Image (cartoon, rainbow over all chains, first blue to last red; front, side, top):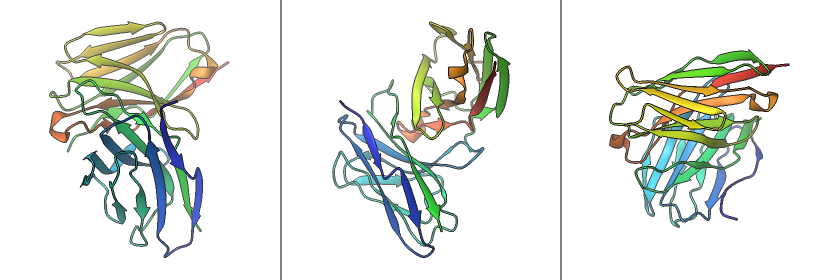
Length: 113
Length: 112
């Protein structure tokens, strides 16, 4: 079955550590996205990538980094520079067609301890 | 900046209709979307509407679009407890490529 997979579902990080969230899709989608969701707030775009080896900053990119070495994979690293990293992180992918829809993973809940 | 606005909460009785409203800002958005998020999960596309349409119906869901006022609504007929979730309105402005701009989400609570 085609889909988009995020791992792990829950992640705990000590302050000062970097941590990498995985996102893999087998939908043959060119575009991939990372969003952050905080309670009572909508989705805020962190980074997006329209094509392999290219990515763009979203609205809240500070303290995060990404890579897009393969079409299927778009990992997100939450660095120690991110001041408030505890949140629910959602990865999505889509085609680049006009009437596309975004397919979402099940999310990773990151907690800083 | 670009904002998609929604009311944050809505409570209805089981069997009643729910209407979730949204206003968006970018008239270049060709498609407008409604997504549903259940607790602890990702978002799933419920329905979408092309910007040259006024209405789209899909079983219990009716989407109304007022392009002049940039107002989008989602009506759920015969609301069930399984409809309790957060509903997100989203637009896809062309100047972001195929990026999506989401509203804050409306938490729908269905009371028995």
